[in-house]
Image (cartoon, rainbow, N blue to C red; front, side):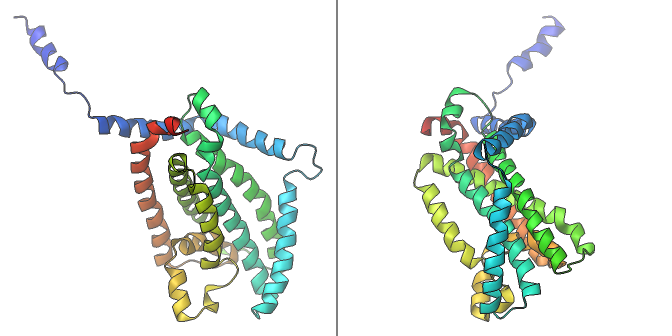
Length: 283
């Protein structure tokens, strides 16, 4: 027998890849393809905002104006109720509201993402991660508009940038890593169980009070502080908010926030591997 036939035989006897391995590769390709497909979610995000504020004088700056009014009214009222100096409380409330609005809106929209885009998903073959990126990008644009409100408050109350500001990109990256896995997991589960988006909206309306958005954690007693510290969103919000206030989060806060992102993504990616192919059938 010729030698070349002997060497060719093992190639034909290679064992087929397992189904799990194939699903893993497809899920990984989906996320990578969604990132490579950045022009789609970039253009769609910008066009959706333009359509939403079509024929409006201020356009997306209505969100900024709304945030200014909300911060001004709540800042003066709550600083009086909590007996807090307005110069310390109002910038804290401002950056807390801006950050929480990004987090809660992205999660809530992520929960209904695949449902609202069902007609497109069933007609056009795109990576599912594209639609999550669309949600994140659209809310990032709004975040960039509203962060200007904090910059005005910081200027008014003479918050001078310190080296703590160098941690802002890292804090926002940790925030985005956590928001992205929560939005994806919520979207996958909601595609199967249609009550989940309403459950998430109700949960967020409760979690805003269990997360130090309107109050400083130092204002709480030991028992209440322990409950607040058990909420993982407390650390996620803290690493994204504190550098703006010239406060460096503790090492334990960073480790917890990063750990939540890592374990959250491990869970979500495992879920994504299992149900990614079923999403179009659920829609």
